[in-house]
Amino acid sequence: MSDLTVIMLAGLAVLVGAVVQSGVGLGVGLVAAPVVTMLDPTLMPGCVLVTTLTLPIFTLSREAGHADWGGLKWALGGRVFGTMAGVWVVASAPKNLLGLIVGGMVLAAVALTAWKVRIARNPRTLIAAGATSGITGTSTSIGGPPLAILYQHAPGPQVRATLGVYFTVGAVLSLSFLTIAGELTWREVLAGLALVPFTVTGFLISGPLRRFLDQGYTRAGVLVVTAASATTLIIRSLA
Image (cartoon, rainbow, N blue to C red):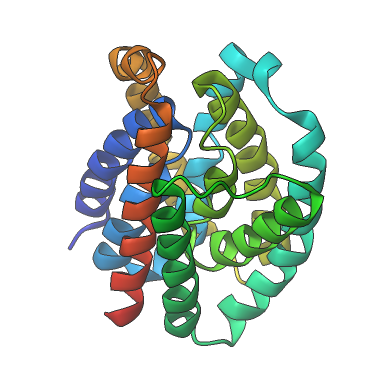
């Protein structure tokens, strides 16, 4: 399969993921990571991490004032340590086992919260979510679900802005640590940059979905996308 074919097929996945993420705050990694892995696993995780770095910047240009900065300091603190562990996973650990464990934990959390069990958002849970997200985000490029679970009851703009800040800083951390460890190639970076136009297009056409979700459907959207993300992670791990 030619590189152009890979970019075009992966681009379609990124476009769909960008539309979803523009509405609920996460989604690019969920849709793009399995497709890129299937088309060319040598591009993972750097390609999708580069791509996911772009969309939050557009989101923040519109909604940065809604971000929960107090919660972010704890989540990003956890992300730093999780990112270092994620680099080790990329270099040596079995990703399939990690994916199964994390995917199962996230699905359990979704099931509990769907039954009105509220997971407290406090420094301990934010640090834990950030650390878990750092591990999975760096090793598989799917890192949104743990934090999304904690913010599912927040208004749509706050969910998108908070996750936007988190994804931006988190992607920079992951890419930086992968570079230092020698686990990021220029081919991954260039492929990720080639997918950026698809990300921008998805953001530009996402307005109707965003307005619909902001009418009180953000929580349902977050739970659906989070559950799908965890399921994708499990399927990838089993495969």
